[in-house]
Image (cartoon, rainbow, N blue to C red; front, side, top):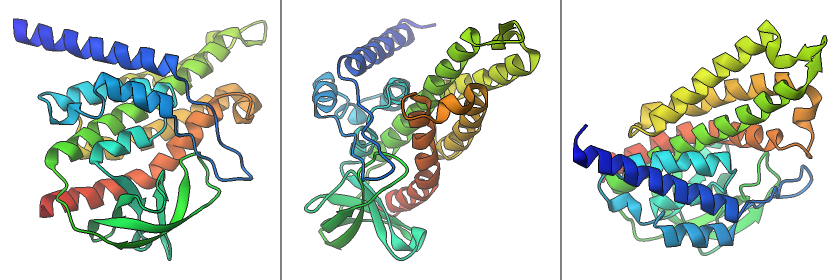
Amino acid sequence: MTTETTTLDADIRDFVESVRKICESAPTADQWSPTAPGDDRNPLLRSRLADAGWFDIAAEPHATEFLGAAGIELGRALAPVDLVDDLLGHGVALGASVIGDIDLARYRGAGDTVWLCGTEGAELVEVVAAEPVRYVDAQAISIITTGSVAQQVLTTAAYDAWIAAMTGYVAGLTAGALELAGGHAQQRIAFGRPLTELDSVAKKIADCATASEGLQMAAQRGPDAFVLRQAPVTAFRVMRVCHQILGGLGFTLEYPLQRYSRRVEALRVWTPAVITALGGARAAG
């Protein structure tokens, strides 16, 4: 290993540790309710991440390795997804050609600009009006009306940064959920012994751990669009097993597993369409 590689690895570890400590110092509360729109944006966390360089690193060498590794900590901490989306320079929305007869944006309101992602690519638009709606996750989802703005090119650096950070984020969600399920299985006694000593449960945890470690390794190695496209699918499978291990406890609002699984489900719906549309916009630019 060269001195340059050793230094880079140390710098990445330091950045990841900084992001982890920031997430611990500014935790994100659960703002979701099944009966009302939810918005988990965290101004304090955003400010501290900005001071640490989270939003500036995309233009730096080896940015994808830094963002992929640090994104794991954001996912594990259930940080707001807008912290990842803003690496694109604007918000993200799904167009009617993808989801039906309405446009949906996450974390954006009137006066904001978003990459409106459709089946034919993505275009930059202004949100003229926004109506918050109830959604499966607290991502401030709104039905939006849009207007035209001067078009911008989506740079390859911004696209790659988003891909890496989002892959890390999904990997972090998976790791966080598995830590909850594994901890429960160690403490839960069944048939006179911990669940982890039952072969069927131990095998499930081992399989999930393999998947989780694989996602984290992929995030740390400059992932591409193909990797991110598969990440929410893998995470969703891990979530199902975690819920099986925790049983009814995992579905209660008092226990945090439901936050991980709701977020994975939302990202599993949004991510493929966003990847395709943004990839097309970047290629066209």
